[in-house]
Length: 285
Image 1 (cartoon, one colour):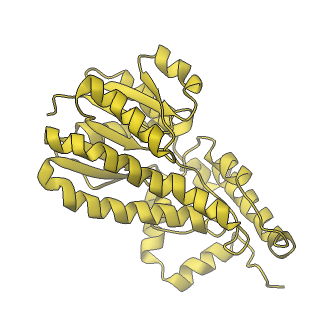
Image 2 (tube, one colour):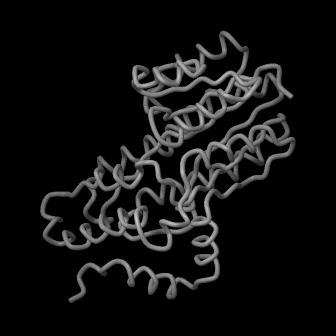
Image 3 (cartoon, one colour):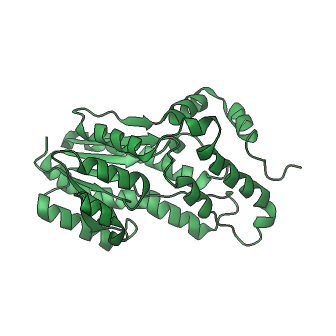
């Protein structure tokens, strides 16, 4: 086990990050560093025993300052939980390119930059855990979410590569694949929908259907009953941190189990047919 028990978690102002910080802070031994772009939003976590630090994963100076703060006290970061991320919804043609770049900057490049900064300390300590919050969306795709799913596919690939490359240094890399989690994610995804000029006339009805289906999947119907809550993810993160030999992947919630199995056993044609039962195909009469 590591000499350092410092855990750095990104995106702790709400949802899964907040729940994970609170859960780990209640456990003996771990020193939890909860981070967010605006540390003022972390007052509740600080009161619960978390240390807090400002961290914007899209800003190199912010990353360096945050990691240096933790390492100055603990020598190395024992575990990094890459949680910060969001969903950019919209049809492939309709989303402005700058919004696509912003999605990748947070969900992919932020994970890369922060992990690269943390790894030298873990290598020196010969121990570390990198826990990446992926999604069932890293293995399947819902219409209107192509760019978000692309970022999670990237996290899956990067996690697989990194797991092999750092094993010899005593570092484990774990992918967490939540399904539907009632955490405000659907509202944020709908609110993040952005459309290029002239595209609303083409994709308006499709975007409305995507927003409606996204909202309803969390609130009613069979998959809403299979959805999890943020503490479910937090408990799985704990398992990934304390296991002597953690698994490469952990799914969270029955919705992930069911949908991933359905995608695994469906041909592309069958999956597309299933999606058409819930989403209109743009351009069709």
